[in-house]
Image (tube, rainbow, N blue to C red; front, side):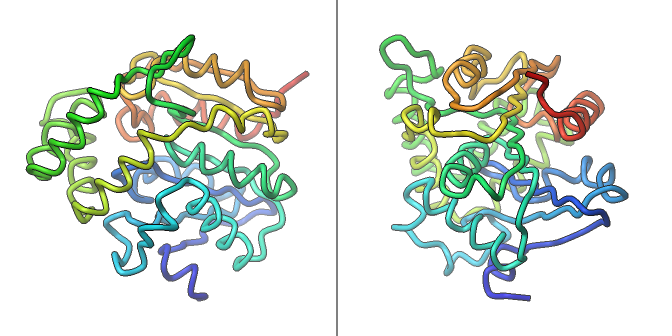
Length: 270
């Protein structure tokens, strides 16, 4: 195993000719795909990895400068593909990893046959003629709460993000992976994500994009999926799922898995 693979806890599973990469969002790790992976193993080579800063990674490898932008994570992704000698893949990115996939696909469109975006947003802050769902004051309060008492913040944020009470298995799972992050790293990562604005680069995406979105998501309003559809440079399609929450693959796998498989197996008809 190479240095990059080891740092990102890369796993390659399954059999088949095509590669699928499953990339997780903030506060989770590759385990967020646990309900989905088994459905792919007979037909695909599945690559799982952890973003740097996830609780499962060595915090010493987190580069506060490199990982202060989504480009840093995109270069991590491209390094993984290079080390594994992957020349083409279907990329499934959840939340921030959808935008990481966008950046990587602009740099190397030849490596991506399609991007499947789950709960993706190019900007979380509201702006003139743009509704991202948050005001700066909301984000400042979020960052302050994280700084003041990280564990208490995790316990409050998890049910809001997942959608559900604290007793649900999905909420408990997200709380666990969220709390596994080192608090100072979690704060930097959350700032990088929530203050990002990727709208200007969407036009440069040429890879087909499948945009999957929960009908109710505290982090990403449904209108954002339509914004992506209208502004991506290549062909795209949107499907709004009858799910609640920002991590539907964890909280509603029975609904999400068939949708994911459909978009993996079928290309966009122009």
